[in-house]
Amino acid sequence: MTTVTATSPGTGRWKSPVRTRALVTRAGFLGPFYTAFALFFLLPIGFAIYESLLSQRRIGGVFGRPIEVFSGLRQFGAVFSDPQFWSGIKTVALYVCIQVPLMATVGVTLALLLDVTAPRLARVFRTSYFVPFAVSTVVATILWGTLYTPGSSPLSEFHINIDFLSHNLVLPAIVNIGIWEWGGFNVVLMTTALTSIPTEIYDSARVDGASRWAMAWHIKLPLIRPTIVMSMVLTIIGTMQLFTEPQIMAQISDSIPTYYTPNMFAYYQISADNYSFAAAISVTLALVGLVLSFTFIRLTRRRTY
Image (cartoon, rainbow, N blue to C red; front, side, top):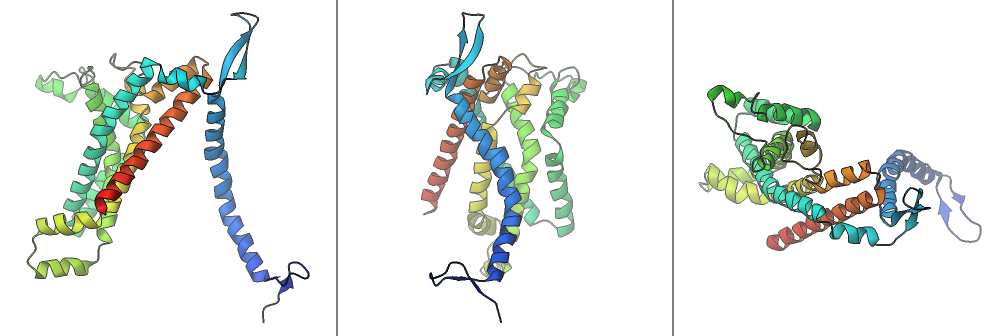
């Protein structure tokens, strides 16, 4: 028999000690997550928004002491009127248009091939595809940067002189690094979605005489469509934050300026102690990524229904 205690006299409401312990247990498990979430996610976002509403002024002339004052949306006006910011936006937009469909195509194609491969070989190939994901972005960029350098490129052994660090090829070179590093992650997502499809559907299709190509096109792809959409949304969010690859490759290529991407432009502004302007760039870029992701989800949902 469960013992109950009244929470407040005269209200007619009773609370079980078992239920109280359950609430305490939930709070104990969820508390650390929400604490870390608030400290390392919500608080930095709030501080960035607050910092973007400030600007620096100097007391006592040009060489006076700098102070921060509230300036409203002035920093955002400066961001939208800066041609270097729009140059970075164009670069990222082009990168998104290339990377997102290419990444989805690579992930879906390799996953479909693994799905019809023998189980033992599929595990080997799946592991080999996922290994680059375990390599840090810095190491991957240094590795590929060495391969791109004309003097150390393996292509120079065959007298093939292609400057992957030139103005016209540096963006495709960065795209290649992204696909090499994140392609395995997308393959794992697609493979997991394919393994969740009931085998009865495949058996019925075989009875009806469907070929492997017909099953892939008419059964597998429609059923893993939500996973494909989720993968593309994650790719959009990741590509909008492009920073590490061009920042490292800028050390070996003259084709990458400090404003090559918005994140690089914000990093340069921070180095110049222009924190408010950098915060405005970051907030603007976050809003652009949010709008793009939301628009893409809405468009894909309309096509589905």
